[in-house]
Image 1 (cartoon, rainbow, N blue to C red):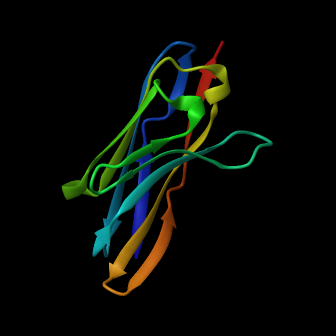
Image 2 (image 1 turned 45 degrees about the horizontal axis):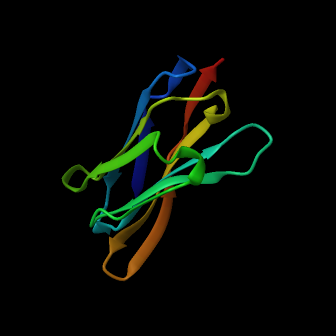
Length: 120
């Protein structure tokens, strides 16, 4: 089984910064894409940023220029540095990854989520 563990959430004032971390552990053959999603109260979960093992990156328009995604392939870890935070960034942030648990077996896993609250 594979587990994704997030950390780094918290309460911050508008304009502040936070860094989220997510580490995947367990039976891992390969992880290509690692994603950060977020879900605010009453809203659908949305993709915030994604990064491939080769370093290709995509961001939601709402976070471009403020958030930076990175990863450490050797540690099966992904990070999200969030700068210039706004109250509308308040949400539970989730790490997600489709994981090859065997050469022909791809399964999707989610972390438990970490709360980010930005006060105005």
